[in-house]
Image (cartoon, rainbow, N blue to C red; front, side, top):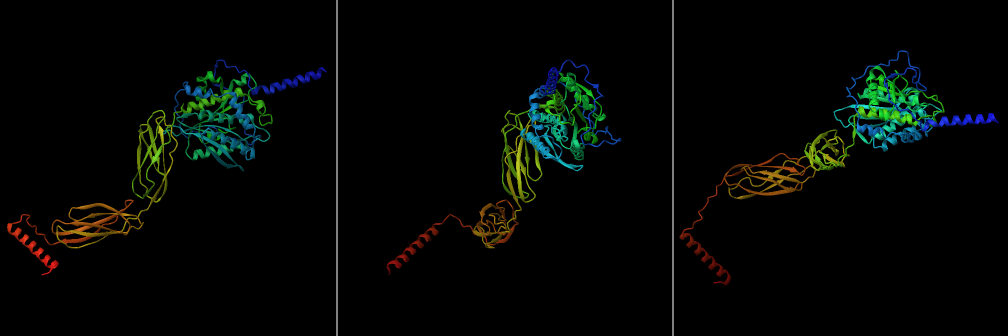
Length: 576
């Protein structure tokens, strides 16, 4: 009977100890005396199915570029507001969802479903998100990447926080590496509420357990495309701690080229000690996680790893019941603070309203057209405008303009097509509006009217009005206008419009005798002009101008003629 009681007591005790780390235990947060200790005893393991690295493996690959001269870390209220949002509740929420997919071996349906979950989470945060497909070593899968673009347009710096979401068979991988993937999700969720001078990418890799395949291809492609990745923060197995000592310490792996980044995260830990409560240890180098191929491609990277490695590594027991959420939250605060300091966090500014775009929607090649845009800025700040013309060109940022002030930009197209024109605005804090509604602009190769024909008298007398006929046709059937130069320093201006093929009747008189050349050209309704048509004329006969003053004799003769007229009229009416 006593033996049964003892056995029962032992079992109960084991059950309590097993469950206890999930909610966390009191971890000492006293003063940290040494934040840069060496911890050689705990070495990160190799990925599950990865082959042993060759003996000539090079860890200390030179950097592609010199590391940035980062200023000393000083406490920032924005960074504090970021890390204060990290707690056990948000951590466990994501962890339960991710481990709920079960084992996530690369290429399996559960791994694909987990990738879709991560994608959807990023998308729901309003981030730019994409799948990054890869094929290597007989495997094909997707990395998942979300991006917050930096607001400093002069900077091409990129910072990456990453983890792997795949597992080995037979385990949900709560620690390896759901813990790191959750850190990436939490970072994306919180940081989506802020803006940063430099670009941040949140990346979840697959293929890690097969040999770092997903991160291998990602890092190689980034290097081949010239990405300026300044620093990579890799989170892999950051949640196991069974003692207070374990829960107050964290290992960080680095290579020689990444020592500046390790020093930086140590400085962050020191500055924000009241919010993090960790002692960091320089754990040496490791090729056992996704940071490795960033090293191989000349990028700086550090690898955060739990101080005491879980005894459930790659075992079915690597479950939520064996992680310490309090410890994980502390580690994530450190990683987020480091990332926020590196990328230079700032509070979000309210974006300008969606601009209103106006302008013509039809035109012809090589003609200049004017487009106008206007927006308002909720904070009353000045704004800039950026027109995109749909042919691969843009206006660049124009401004600054006052909130509510309309601006214009001009554009001509050299090829016939339908172009999508749109505009966006940004404020002085580099916060951009959404794109305006698009204008679809149809540009045609417009053909000019044919040369006009001119018909009318070729000679006449000065001072007499003559009628001339002007006719042309337009190959596109457009209506036309005529412009006439009479050759005597007189012009008609543009007259019309007339239907294609219709005749325009215009009169003119010349005041002096001489030889003249009438010139006429036509243009269609979109402005394409014809060549000049001509007609040569002459005005050879002068008109004798008579005096308006009449003599008495002339008056007498006038009335005499009137009298004779009425006499003749009476004879016609009444007879002899």
